[in-house]
Image (cartoon, rainbow, N blue to C red; front, side):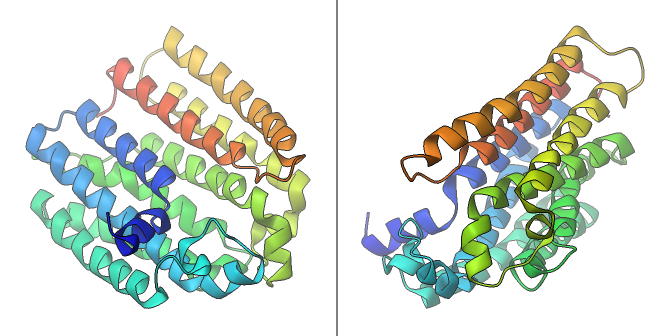
Length: 278
C-alpha cells in the first residue's frame, strides 16, 4: 500500500466509518433488504462516511497541526491536504450516485444526511447548534435504509427519533477528548459551552435512544429490550472511567466515543432481534 493511500485510509476516520457502515448494513438486513439492496446501502453509507472523514481532516489540518495531533495524517504530513480534499469531493459526489440505485427518494435522504454532516465540518462546528448536524445525519440514516426498500414504506417516527438521539449523544462523546485542544484553536460548539460535566450529562441522550427503540414499536417491551436499556445505562459511565484512567499517562480519551458505537451496535441488535421494524 502506497504512503498516500495509507494516509488517506487513516484520514478517513476508519473506526467510526466502519462502525456506522456496519450498523447500516445490519439495519438494511433487519428491515428486509435483499443482498443487492444491502450492498447499495453499504456502499452509499461508506462513501458518505469517507467524504465526511476526509473533509474533516482537510479542513482541520491547520488546527490539528497547531495542537500537535500526530495521529492526524494530514497534519502530520503523511498525506497532502489537497489529495485529501479531492478524495472527499469524489466520495461526496459518489454518495448520491450510489444512492440512486435505491430510488430517488432514498437518494435525497442520503444526500441530506451527507450535506448535514459536511455542514458540521464547516461552519457549524463552532456554533451553539453544533449538535444539530449530528442529529439530522444520524436520523437520516435509518430513514434512508427504510426508504431504500423496493416497496413504498415510510420510516417509523420512533426509529428516526432514536437515531437522532444517538447522533446527538455521539456528538458530545466525540468532542469530550478534544475540549482542551479545541479551546486552544477557538472552537466553541455546544459541548464546549456546556463544559465536560454538561457534555457527560448528555449520556441521557444515549439512554433516550435505546428507550425509544424499546418503547416505540407496538407491543410490550421484550426481555432483549430491557437488557439493551440496562447496557445503555452502564456502558457510558464505565467507558468514561476507563477514559480517565487512560488519560493519566497522557493518552487520548477515545473510550467515550467507542461507548457510543457499542451502544449503537446494541441498539441495532435489539432492532433486528425484535422483528418489529417496519
